[in-house]
Length: 106
Image 1 (cartoon, rainbow, N blue to C red):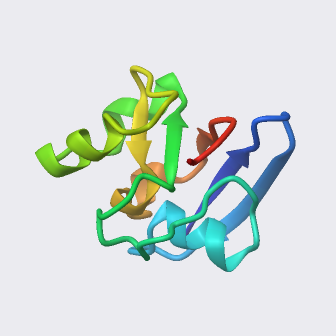
Image 2: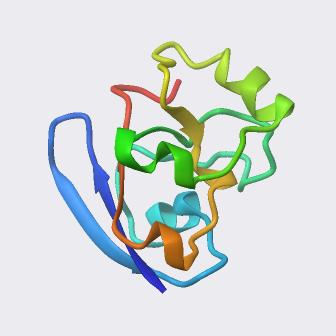
């Protein structure tokens, strides 16, 4: 289990405890955190769980798949640290991770 801090576009912060193996998207959806929709339920079929990983964490979240990269190309606010939060599973090394949400998921 580890802590995840979600930062909404307006700066509002929410920190939760997330069980190992659950995705950052699942943590947001289960805790009613606005800004991550997860419309496809984590199946890499949409980009409504797009987040920006804080710089200090980007090397710890794993490599992006080609399918994830293609979906992120649909995100209007894609940046250098963009990821789909459904593809990042909580693990010990991610305890304390900070993710920021874009202004819109659509």
